[in-house]
Length: 202
Image 1 (tube, rainbow, N blue to C red):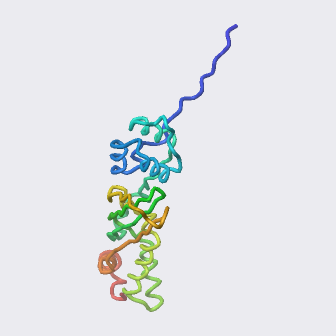
Image 2: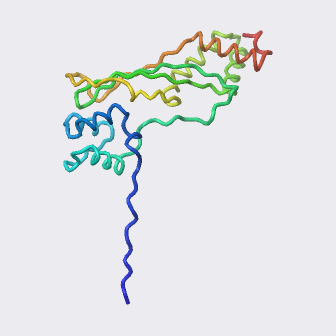
Image 3: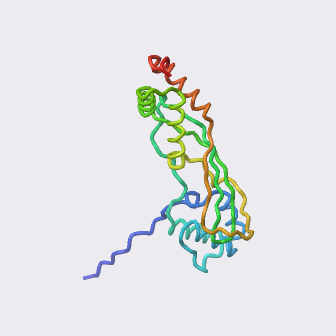
C-alpha cells in the first residue's frame, strides 16, 4: 500500500507591484534595486525589509508581490449618480521619512456629493434660516473631512525624492484646495435643474 503525499497549496501573489508602489518608485527600483536608501523606503512603505538575496529588480518584484499588501488607495463608492454634484479638489502633501528624504506630491480628483445628502444639507440650512452661503460652507466642511478617503488623486505619480537632511522623520503635511465659487455654482445648478422649488429660498 503506497503512502499518499499531500502537496501544500501553491503560494499565491498578494498583489501586483503597481498596487504597492507608484510608477516613479518602481522606476527607481529598476535603476538601483540594491541601494540602501531605496531599501529604507521599501521598509517605510511596506513595514518589511527584503532579504539580502533580493538584489535584482525581478527578485524585489517577486518579493513584494508575495509578501506585501496593497497600499495604493482604491477609488471608493459606487458608480456616480448623475443627480449628484462634483467638485474638483486639488491635493498636496509633503512626506518625510526615516531614510532622510522628502517628496512633495500634487494631484487632482473629483469629489462627489450624493444628491440625497445634498438635499438634506440644503433643506436643513433653509430650515435654520440660512441660504446658499451656509450650504457652501457645509459642503466645504464635508470636503475637508472626507476628500482624502473618498478621492484617489494618485499623488504617488508625482514628485521627486530629495535625500537631504531633514529634522522631521516619518511624518507628512497634507492639504486640499477647492473653489467655493465652484461649489456655489454646482449647488445652484442642482436646485435649478432638479428642485426649482428650493431655488428661490437660496
